[in-house]
Length: 266
Image 1 (cartoon, rainbow, N blue to C red):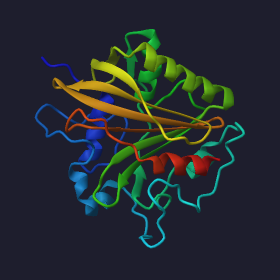
Image 2: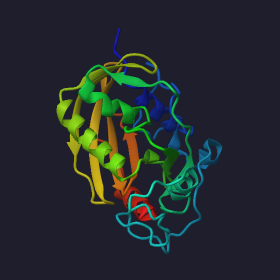
Image 3: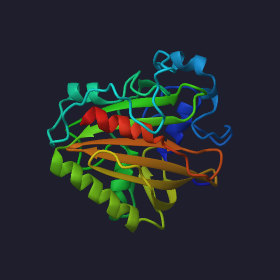
């Protein structure tokens, strides 16, 4: 019997099917076509059915994709203040913040998630579960889908920890990426998961600190790259993730998402 990849990868398959990604929902099975989070989302007209809000056209005013939108309002998180739930909900990316992306809701994660078999890898499964540690005092979740052709599908969760907690979160993740480079296994969630390797990726400068890394899962015997970009502004952390179900190439999280989110938090 082939080992299954992480429940995170199966969740991203749901987004590819044009459904708002909901943490904790099982999606793909061995007989389904593989996708990189793009599949049926190639039909942007169906985004409304998935709860994705498409911003009004601003083609004549849109900045270059590598730059954040100039009209976002900062939440004042750069000093390390712990944002309230209401402030997080206002600060997370919304329709119109990035012209190239529609925005939809995403459910909070379920109570139970995956647990790594090695203690040093626990920070990685905490992020996979949608609950980065130290645990957040408040959290907000969104699904982001490219408005041009439904590509890429990226999910985000915004968590507030306070300055010390947020710095600890990034430090633990960096250590885990190094310690777990040769992979690990996890139990819980939808069943046992195998991750064959972990590697650090380059990340654009955004906020006070950034980290990008790839965790390669195993799905029906095929490698599935899961990519995470983490941005800290003061005591608040934005985590973006996406996956590639088509081949082993590393999927990309557009820098404009990270830059604009950092601008909304500052």
